[in-house]
Image (cartoon, rainbow, N blue to C red; front, top):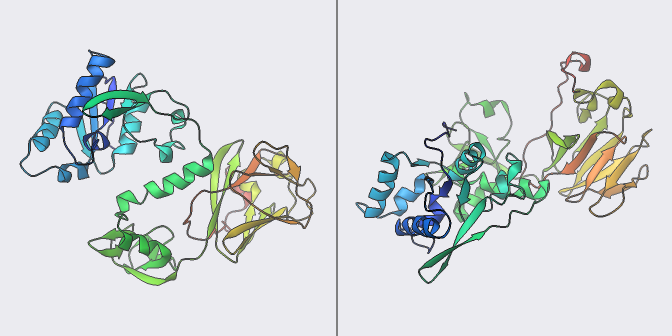
Length: 354
């Protein structure tokens, strides 16, 4: 991302694309009306700064006053255009913490990277009744990590050109890159969503043609949290098993990679097993010495009985060994790839988490 700092410090950051399209068809007059209404109703001395998606330029008619107005804001250094405006808007607001944001977006996908968005009162939407504009504070009530993952996955499709129904069909398939020099050539398949360019599926990394392999596997992803902070994401393809504990090997996650010695020693070598059955994650405690608890929303924690299988549901936390490590299901609907443990480096040589 480019330098986000602007001068002078703005008091209002405008997400220009949704504002210009307030009534469906792109028109700069709505930006002007919103600016005027804010000055009249909220702050006559407001300093505005706008961020537009590059696509907004193409929505305006050629040789139009709309394009000239956007260019005028850029010449005055009170606007910029970027490929994807949302992260830029939020990054600027993160730096200028007294500024408000004018948008119609809830930025659900960005709340993991910017926790201050959860519960903020800094975001306002223009409300249009006829041609009269007023302002309403948007409801940014906190949402769950699971919901954030889901929205982030969807938002990541925008810069990859995956908007049309034809492009979305590519998401139901697995692909490999035809370019032998690409980083994905070392893998059997591209372990992320492909991109779509000029009517063709391409590698998201090098933008060379992608070759279809077959239907996408119903991979699921689990998230590991250390004292509530995300530390790892582990993809588990359909039909595969991942064992969590103090053991190393293929199909295993060694907790010694992220836990200090005292916490790691609370885990059994084979502590719990995560199995992807038909696109759902099944959890089984392997008769571990300190057990595994399951924490559901608005319920008291309960222990998983040894060798009893339970489905891992959204917004549920697994807490093995009663410690600081917890596991939840990712909200992603299309995770790809397979977890591959580091078998070359002994745990005692890895940087220990404290």
